[in-house]
Amino acid sequence: MSSFRKPFGLSSPLYAVILVSLALVARGRLASSARPRPRPPLLAYIAFGDSIIDPGNNNNIQTIVKCNFPPYGRDFMGGKPSGRFSNGKIPPDLFVEAFGVKQYLPAYLDPSLKLEDLLTGVSFASGATGYDPLTPQIASALSLSDQLNLFKEYVNKIKSGAGEEKAADIVKNSVYMVVCGSDDIANTYYSTPFRRGEYDIPAYTDLMLNSASSFIQELYGLGARKIGILSLPPIGCVPAQRTLDGGLERACNAPANQAATLFNSKLSSELESLKQKLPGSKLVYMDIYHKLLSVIQNPSHYGFEVADRGCCGTGNIEVSILCNRLDDLETCQDDSKYVFWDGYHPTENAYKILSDHVIDNYADQLL
Image (cartoon, rainbow, N blue to C red):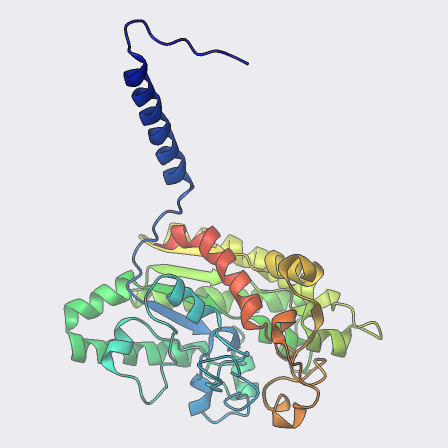
């Protein structure tokens, strides 16, 4: 055992005090280094896109793509089917909660919204929309152009209620999230004949990319600066895609996943290019493809038991109006064991994993 020689001239009590003091300082430094950094304040959070971040806008438009009925929302605010395409909270709720902004992000079209709700952010997203302008037409959803028009209306409401200066501050300093594109590939391209005769996948992903780029530039033109854009997920591995195109074994639909990765590669490159073109912008590509694929391929590692079926009904294909009270006998009792809530959308627990991944890896680049 190594010895530590007492410095000459120090009495034993004084020497002991010095050693204890040094130990406490060292322990304090270790504790402070292990302590998580405080998160920067988030002024407001504004979302555009599809069902992944639609908290209920589709409740208030003429479309059959709705979920404001049981069993949706059975774990949300005491069992409220709010129009969120899951059993509970969805990513924008988890983001604003993590940053202490509010408990959940409301839908802009919610008629009960007050000015204070608008000041900390809303979602303009609409389930079943896409980058391809044809996608929302097929589903009667809000297109990205529609969502931008609502955003302009939103800004005018803030100007009227809180003043020009406050509105300008919110527009410039809010964090914006864009989640879109899955419905283009899964529904418009692979489930209808409207695009496949005219486009192969490389050409179709170019069409999607051009629309995504135009949207981001228009949003920047309206004053947005901090914009996070989520990658497409491994769309071929959602339960409905397995059932429709995965064969008897219900394997992941490889062509759909390949299309998603191709688009993701193009999107990442385009965002790097746009950063140079748009002064003062923070454009952050957020990869969730590989994280969700890891959860699907290794469910037990993340605390799940079932990754190839949803909780609702048989779990094979039910989504939106097909996931309803008539499925109660077959719907799972414990959705915490499931990666997917319905044939398309993850459970709140799976969303928590993805949201934590996004916050841990990308939030600092936006704030």
